[in-house]
Amino acid sequence: MTKSELIDALALRRKLPRKTAEQVVNTIFDAMRETLCEGNRIEIRGFGSFKVRHYKGYIGRNPKTGQVIEVAPKVLPVFKISKNLKALLNEDL
Image 1 (cartoon, helix red, strand yellow):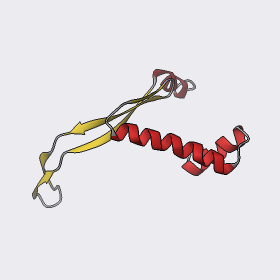
Image 2 (tube, rainbow, N blue to C red; image 1 turned 90 degrees about the horizontal axis):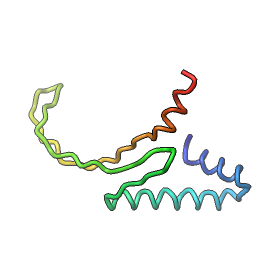
Image 3 (cartoon, helix red, strand yellow; image 1 turned 180 degrees about the vertical axis):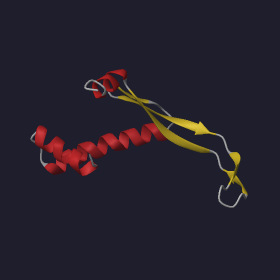
Image 4 (cartoon, rainbow, N blue to C red; image 1 turned 90 degrees about the vertical axis):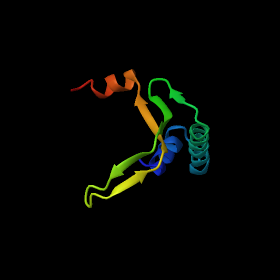
């Protein structure tokens, strides 16, 4: 599902104008982005949780050339699925 499809689904299910649904979706995503940028965790019960993970820099090697390279430290978002959603996805297997 794309962001546009999510907006359309919200507008259809809640009988909202598409512009209003778009504002709602953008507000939610903006709030989630700000929370993660602050280093805080997001938990949506029954769906999963998002958090940021800090990775240290390290010395790596280009597999093609064998050249040694320095990989900079980085911060990446991580998603962990809830037990409920995981069970639901594996229900029919």
